[in-house]
Image 1 (cartoon, one colour):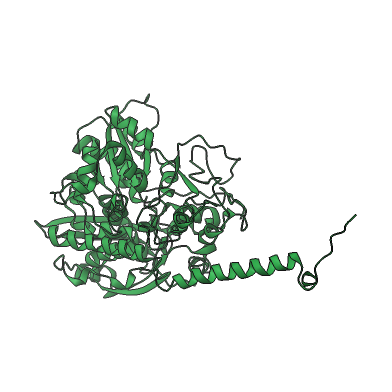
Image 2: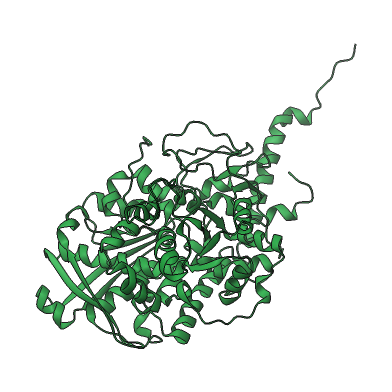
Length: 107
Length: 473
């Protein structure tokens, strides 16, 4: 019967030890490489681009229709004149206001 | 750079078994996002979750604790592998469009800066008239959520003035005029009995973000009196469309109006299902417009995300970018600059400041004037922004209150942050009574609604990883 004899090199570093060191090294490299890409990839760039679009719309509406603030909206004027009477009026209280609910999550 | 927008998988409502939940009431929709078995356990979502509802360790398939989850969908849009799926009401809406209902699209502000991404244009491409034309072609009537945002500001701004008048100035009632001089002079007298504001302490929090409202309800119920009693724009749009819209604008049967929120948000799906939001039905019954036998119907019947809307257009063979970008708004298509910036962090605050500043000081500069820009409240990419805004009072109010000017201290929380990191210090201050703020805006998603859980997923984020892998993990 032949027995498996461990080679001298693996006496210093075991199979498990090697896997551990190798794994950690690869993980560190992967995280590092990912972090380096942060230098040239702006991951929140799309948020900034969309924000720019939103303020562009603000400018467009102000320039084309002269509407900067909510009370200038012609439909708002119509809504309160024809229907809701005034903010915090009876119609507003029943259609536009609400109450909140205590949820027993126990956190 | 990979230019393709990641396609998120969806599932129809009601096909997904959930354990018994404690933080939902009967009828509320839970489980709007779910982790599919394609999850590889990379742990990215856990670091994006504002509440710690995402459970799991590296290498293990993650799971959502739905009692803790506030449905914001940040896990979904940040998943590098597209492994998180969303509940979709698309089939139901398509059916209603074919059945001859008056289907009303409530289009959120952040949809117009992102929908073009699904059709190959860069983020931030403004799509307004084109989007309206495409929606009309698909069979919708338009109710701009930006118009509802203007309604919100009228109510929420008035509430802020009321709270400040009661708590800071000690008044028992206040009367003021909201005026505008273009194209003809318009005056609206507002008379507030301030005794009801005894139960509405300062500071006032915004209520537009449904995920934030749920966060407060689950984690900080003591803060609830501070949250504005105004509904969110979506929930103002629903009942207005079914009452005023149906009866006085479109002249249709209110029972046959089907309202669809088109939102950048997954939490809006949950918000629309809250049981108290049947106010149009209640109002119509009280006024005797519909008979008592009509079963209760919701204010907002269904919610589609921006991604769902793009899918609807694709199924109908419509490309919104092919329409011309000009129109004359009519009815509920009118909106102000204050209404459209609701989609970005700091926008609600700026719109409220434009309203309060103009109403209290009586000034009305030209619409393009810099005076309307309150740049210091804009959130951009800062997690928290605070500012003090001094408003000189107009002469009638000076006489009524006996002071010359008011200073409003405001704060904008741009994303609740990992485990509430950005929000918690602000709430702790309010609860301990040391807060110096009058008005606080909270947005659950970093950057505001335009980075919400229902938006197109951009490969500039972390989602580029999956397409570059040679083999699926």
